[in-house]
Amino acid sequence: MSPIDSPSERLSDGQGTDHRVVPRPDEPPTLEPQVLGDLAEKVLQRIEERVFGQRQAGEALLASFMAGGHTLLEGVPGIGKTLLAKSFASAMGLDFQRLQFTPDLMPSDVVGTNVFQQESGAFHLVRGPIFTQILMADEINRTPPKTQAALLEAMQERQVTIDGIRHPLGDVFFTIATQNPVEFEGTYPLPEAQLDRFLVRIEMALPAKDGELELYRRSLGGQSVEWGDAPLAAAISPSEAASLRRGAASVHVAEELLDYLWRLAAATRDNDHLELSISPRGALALLSAARAAAVLDGRDFVVPDDLKRFLVACWQHRLLLTAEAELEGHTAARLLAGIAAAVDVPK
Image (cartoon, rainbow, N blue to C red; front, side):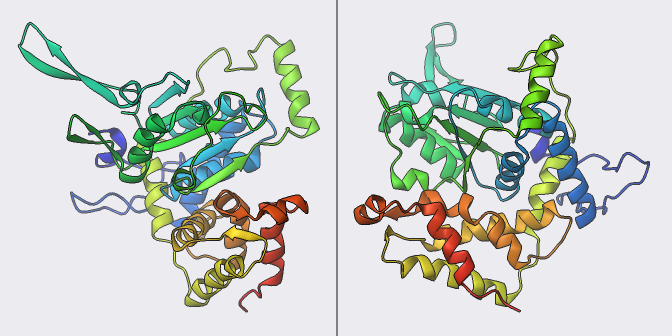
């Protein structure tokens, strides 16, 4: 049993105050919304000690984790995708494995395989890197569809099948997949079914001037711009990370906001520029992200702005534009921005 799946230890705010609600032996602790918001802020601040100028990307990544989804991280080479993933795992206090996807990568390289041991006369399971808490699937679009399918089962079912035997990965299993948008040669585009398994798609932009200047200063001071001289210390414990995920799942959503969510999704289905619109699963993804957004702000209820906050990140990769719309210069992000502005917000 991994630390995050086991009963939690004492949780405090660092000031000597215990915020734990004493649970039954089989029930994990529950924290107040403000405490959860403070934990989330600790994680984000710790990430910013190593990754400069990427606050929005860090928030979306943390929201995706709290919502129980997976993340597709996209950006040009050298922008800090791997650094963000490593820093996130370290700040959360969770186990991390990085797997470089290549054209010759086989499914067994991801999930593992049974190896015959002559000494015992039996097969022994050698687990692959997917048996971790946070998996970074680097350049996921460089591996063939067969290997992508092995990861798809893990993302959807949180289990892998090896020689007909199912092996659970644990409830905390979280995938951060990366791809470089400017490198097309030797890539295998992700099918719509796999794209739909990613709760959010984060497009990492160049950092703001202040963030990039700080990066230069750290480099002049002898600190590595890739990872640093020392591992990043955890900002929270694994049990607190579990509390963040449970807290997001208990956030209240009013009935009128469910209707607002449906109207947002319906607006994509009535859009002539779209060949593929938002499915119920896509709508549920945004609902989960909105609840996580509320936790980031220390609330236990969703407001309309929570749905708007991750609208593009949750839905842009699920939309498929018509050929005519692409020729006219439309993009999924712009269409979603127009939909958000046009759909009436509940009073």
